[in-house]
Each structure stands twice: as C-alpha cells, then as structure tokens.
Length: 540
Ligand code: F6P
Image 1 (cartoon, rainbow, N blue to C red):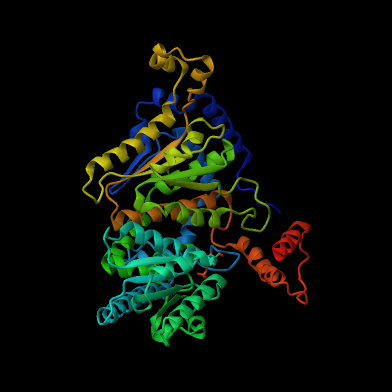
Image 2 (image 1 turned 135 degrees about the horizontal axis):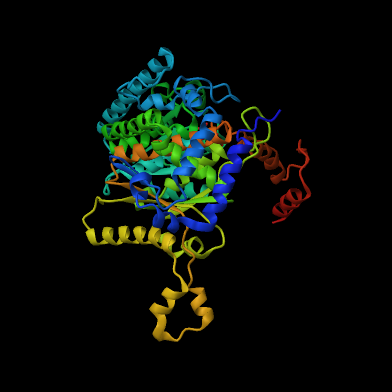
C-alpha cells in the first residue's frame, strides 16, 4: 500500500497558490507587503538568511505548517533527536550531531551509551591529533604535503573545510585524491617529495575500491623513491579499524570514528584529520560549536521561523508545484569553491530517491539537481540562462561581508556583483526601460526584445559576517537539517544510498571484459550499446 504523504486538500491549496504565484510574481509581493523584509529574513548572529526574494508568503508558510502536521514532522524530528533508527532500510540511527554537542545542550535524548561513544570518539580524536602533531614536530624533515585519499563523504567535507579555513599562506599543502583516474594522482605525486609527505587514507568502510587502489599506488611511489617502510607514513581514518589494519595501516596509526556517523555527514569527525592538521584543533572545535548553535535553532525554533524548515519548504514547493527541476548555489567567496560539490553529495545522495520509506514508489518530486559555482566566474558563463532561460531556477547566493585579505576594493566589487545579480533576477528589465536607456541608439525591435529580462526569478541570500569556523559550521549544519526536513516532507529515507551500488557491482564485471579476458564470462547480460563500446575500446 502506498503511503501518500501529501493530502488532496493541502495539494489543492498549494496548487492554487502556485497558479497565483506564477501569475503575480515576486515583485508584486514586495509591492503589496511592506513588512516582507521583517517577515522573511532571519538573523541568527553570524548567519543571516534572506528569503524575501523567493515566492515565500504567509499563506505558503501556514499551508506548509499544516502539511508538516500531516506528515508528523515534529515527531520525526523527535525520533531523530532520540536516536531512533530513522535510517530504516539499514536499521541505523543518525547521530553525527552528537559529535558537535560538546556542551551537551541537553537536546539530544539518545541513550547514554551513544553520548558516551560520541564523547570518547571526540576525546580520542583530540588525543590522536596531538600525538600526530608531536610526532610531526620531531621529524628531521618537516611535512610539506599531505595526500588525503578518500572519496565522497570521506573527502568532500574535509576538502571544503581545508580550503575555507586554512591560512592563505599555510605551509602544508593538502592534496585530495578521490578519483581512480591516475591523471590526478600522477600530477599530485609529481609535486611531492617522499621524505616530506604524509598520507591520510580515509574510508568509513575501508573497502572502497578507488581508495584502496590509490593507497596501493602511493605506497609503491614511496618504495620507488627508496622508502622501504612506506606504511609508517600512512594514517587510516575509518569506522572499520580491523579492515584498516588488515590493509596494512599500523594499528597506532588508525584513527577511528563511530559507525553511526554517515559518510556524507562525517565532516564533524576524525574524517577531517588532514584539514585539522593544517587549521588547528581549536579552529576545528569552533567549527563544531558553530554547527551546534545551528542545531539548537533547528531543534527549538517553531517551524514558522525555523530556517532549515523554511528552506526545505521552498525546495519542496518549487519542485512539486512550480515545476522547478534544479537549484543553483553561488558562493561569492573563492574559499567556498568546493561547497557545491559537498552539497551535491549531501542533498542528492540523501534525497535523490524514488521510493518512500516503506519501499513504495514516491509520488512527489524528490531532490532537485543541485549545481552552481563561484561568483563572479559564474556570471560570465551560466548566468545568461538564469536571467533569460526558459526554466525557473531558484538560486542561492552566499555572501561574506568581510574578507580576510587587505584588497578591499576587490571585496567591495565582489559583493556589489553578488548583490546586483540578486537584484537583477528580481527586477528584470522591461521594454520601456530599454527604450529609455537606449533611446538614442536607434536599436532594431529584435535587439530591443533580446534585451528584455522577465525578472521575478527567485533567489535567496545567505550572508555571513566573516568566513570563520563557527560561521562555516553553522552553514553546513543548516544544509544538513534542510536535507532532513526535505526528506520528511517527501517521506523518504535520507540516510541510505542504495542507488550507488548497482554501478559498483557492474564495474567489477566490466573490468575483465576490458582486459580482453575471453575466458571471463560476464555474469550479467550487458546491453548491446555497452558491449559495443567495450569491443570498440578493446580494438583501440
Ligand atoms: O559510493 C557512495 C559512498 O558509499 C558514499 O556514500 C561514501 O561517502 C563514499 O562512497 C565513500 O565510502 P567510504 O568512506 O566507505 O570509503
């Protein structure tokens, strides 16, 4: 039996609101409601969210609060906090937030065992971090390069934290190797010297094919550089310590984290070791504190002013009632250049599902395509489509008010550009304005029409005062909880990732066919296109 999570009456009301919204637009909302800024901006200290340039309205919020009641949102949030096995397909609790609840705010209601495990794991990480730092300090040749080997959740968050929070002139370089494509690895190895390189292999399971093969190749590179004991330079971060030891990581170099930390939610754990070694453990702890503050907001704020719920509500409304298929994220800060990659995994691996929690087909649109880039680069590539393309693409701007460099004129220009884009998306440009601006130029009608921007294109803005560890922690926790809320609204399990398995299994069967091993019979029947491509590659 299918458990439809949206009732006909709410669906009807939201569809009616959507038709009205499409017809009247966002500018009209500003014109008719002078208190729009007060109502739809949210000041959480270092994190400020402006939703006023979206289709949000009092009516929309109140309908979604009714919808939330129907899907028993509060009780699902309670289940999450109480450590219930909300990842039902894998029968697991989702407890990564415990890692950042250092002041034990008394919000988590999980069993004392999990709380103890979280505290122990945090303490162990700090101690191991300190031991590694001491070891590094006593080396004859200082470490200049860390090669972080890991993929997906075992890398994306660490890379983001490293890039966002490292000093601009940090003395240690961290290279992130995830992909099995050795073009990247060969390039990185050519920049490193074995005597000043440390390797941090990160894998929750310590079975991921790419990670193990990359580690093997790096060990061989050490050997070929004359190092007979390469594994003494390897650290293994994992939730499966015995697997890491079986691989060959020295037991004293294994840094573990609890199994209840999901891969794409693991940035808060020792998975971030390589970033912490560069930014320092104090700043890493501030990252956790910033996330904990946002957690408190998410757990305690009523839905009407809960930023995570409101953002997820808009994602749901756009996808299900305004036929929106994608959402774009533009960070106007180069240090956040890996944010989109991180959020793509967080949101699409969590919510790109076509089954409800009970396994029946979902009857709503789940995760939008999440994409984006860094401003101002994106203005010279994809923004044409945002302003004048036929699809409505809600976009999200992340602005940082104060920079950490001294070139103020660059920063003012950067901010001016980001703000101007949000203003342009809303305002658009009509024929009258074009004629006024270009009156003297004698433009043809077709040129004038090509210059029309419809406007009324939704955008939201997140404004951070500075890119501090606390601000980044809050930002990432906001996206995590937004992802949770969206999963509740669409009635899916946001915490498994079954969709990645089939391709991995088939890759194991394609590989021997590529090696022209005629004796190796494929277990699966491959389609004619794939077989043809295999044959063609084998001929080249
Ligand atoms: O392939 C998907 C995935 O399982 C991700 O969810 C995970 O972050 C990544 O692979 C890496 O897995 P592991 O940390 O076990 O190497």
